[in-house]
Each structure stands twice: as structure tokens, then as C-alpha cells.
Length: 118
Length: 115
Picture 1 (cartoon, each protein chain N blue to C red):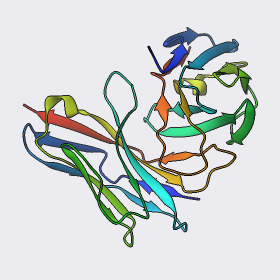
Picture 2: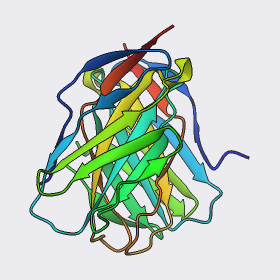
Picture 3: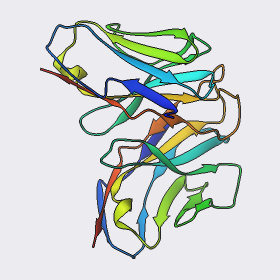
């Protein structure tokens, strides 16, 4: 079974600074996908960024980028120019490359609570 | 237009009661899911349905019974509610393709409190 570990229960960052959230995972599969989700106090789950394991290039979405190290099974999220609206729980998630009849299962880490200090 | 909508948003009930949470998606997706987020914010899949058929059924007490009348709806019925059932329940949907980094669309969650 796959596992996802987020070793930082809480992090804080000054507004406009950069912060990196760590995520490691354990899998024996070679084909898989990785995601970062944001959950603000509104409770809504928002997809921040996603990465295909077969792609060597790190994904970026505006101020969000990842450092994907496949051999080390590491998938960290970097948030640049942090804004107050970035304060939220961040979840790292893993998905197998295979699906069951079109269904797939996201395995989540336990989350990192990010605070942004004005 | 809400893509994945679930009702109610909040549900407070007594132990032993039976309750249902409804979910509807207007995205034309083939696959729907229920996830549970416990008090420590840990998210875990409970069920998935593809075209009204149960595909994924994680270790969940049989007091939880999902029902999919059509592929746009996946309801969750819970019998004999227990204190430990208190959590946020998320409905989600996806296109249902076999490959690709397709996106999972989440509803806004139902916070269930069992007293």
C-alpha cells in the first residue's frame, strides 16, 4: 500500500517570503501522479498543482512550484511571494497510474497547516 | 453553477439516528466518491462508484451505505450513528478515464456532528 508523509504539522511564513512544504511517499509503482491540495477555513478542497511521475520537469502554477525527486520519493511544494490568502491546510496526495474501472483512489498525507504572518 | 454540490452542509444529530447526505454533480462525470475527513483533518476514501456501480469500498462499517440512483448522484446513508462518525464528509467526482492526471472535483463537505 502507498503511504504519504508530511513531516511538518505546522509551518509559518512572512508575507511576501517563500516557504517550502515537504512531502515524501512510499510506493513500488513506477507510474503514478502526485498532487497538492489546499484546504482553507472554508473547508473547500482546492487543487493547487499536480505532477505526472513520468515527467522529469517540475510542475509550476504561478507562485506555486514543486520539487519532484522521483528517486528520493520526495514531492515538496514551494510557495513564492506568500500572500495572506495562502493560509490554509495543505495536503499532499498520491494516485496510482492504474485505475479500477475508471475509479481511482487518492492517498493523502496528514496535512501541513500554513500560517502567513502579515 | 456548483459543480459538485452536497447537502446538507451541517448536520447535527443524536446517537442512534439514521441520516443521509446527498451529492449531485453536473459535470457529466462517470465516477463519484465519498471521502471522510476526521477531527485530525486526515482524509480517507470510503467509496467510489463508476456509472452507478460500486468500484472501491474501503474498510467502512456496513452502517454506511452509498446509493447511486444515476451517475450524477451519489448519496450516503448512515444507520445507527455513533460518536465516532463525527467528521466532515466530502463528495467528489472525476471523469473516469483510465489514464491521465485528471482532476478530482470536491464538494464543499458536510460536517456531521453526532451528540
